[in-house]
Image (spheres, rainbow, N blue to C red):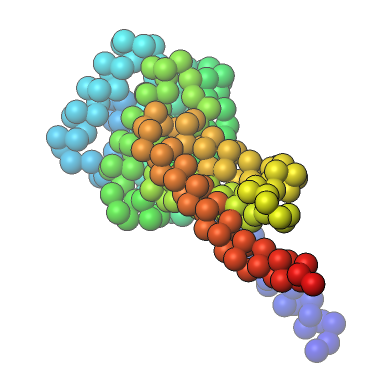
Length: 269
């Protein structure tokens, strides 16, 4: 391939990329205030996510919440049409405002425009967790876009009423399963470390203490801390505790029967 042909291909490729970027920018970067209603409403449902009854109840709920607390919560659903930055002026978004934009085109349904006053109560990690919990495709598929939006709003209102949160309230099943698994692994490490190495020894305390950074991290930091920071329900704690205990007993018995028996046979004359 000659140099002239290579330059021609490169030129066409750059032109194609330029057109692609221009088209992508035209979807998201323009203002279209004509899409916004004339009357003030806390919800603009361009994607028709909510039923008429849901929309009426949500508008009343958000208006009442703003009157009661001063926090301005707003919802915009969009798909092919977007008002763009015109929503800022329409709603007068400020530091005490939260705008939830529901748009499935980005892979995750939910996006948040968070005022500085809300960041003071809920850190950035909270909003990332809120987005990944309720906006992911699996949650939206199982519950619907309307419920995903409403659940995220309920979580925000709960935290605002509490005076702030470090984590999103509630413990989803998949997150509890992760904490249960780490608790079980922590028990296996502790049980294996504590099997007796000497004659007449019941628990090998030096080995158990030596392995404590690992099993305490698995059980305490990854198994217990995420539960107590998200829910006051005692059942997940009980299950994780039993998982840790069961793993420890299982590893202890297996290690004593295998490694302990081998050591005993090797020590015999």
